[in-house]
Amino acid sequence: MGPHEQNLAMQAMRMNQPIPERIAKAPELQLGLQLYLQGFFDMDTDRQGGFGTMPISHSTIADYAAAFGFDAEQTEDLHAHIRSMDNAYIRWLDKKKPKANG
Image 1 (tube, one colour):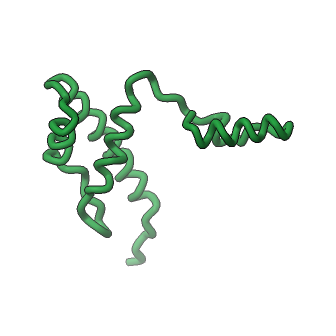
Image 2 (cartoon, helix red, strand yellow):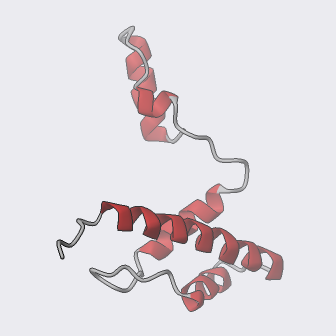
């Protein structure tokens, strides 16, 4: 739980209110995975494509790994995690697009 969510949970407890469901039932990241999630959010800002969202490029991921001094194993893991999150994100975006009437 991040600092914002912790603050909301503390306020709810002080006011004898239930913790908001989106906070109480939020998933927890396994230790060490925050690095990849933050990387995804950082690299998402460099995404190309406008209306037709393009995947985060291989070179963007490699540049990110180099900038943060990842070793070969960490870089391989970064590619795998970013690609997995990116594919899920693009599928989610595609589901939200209005269907064309044809």
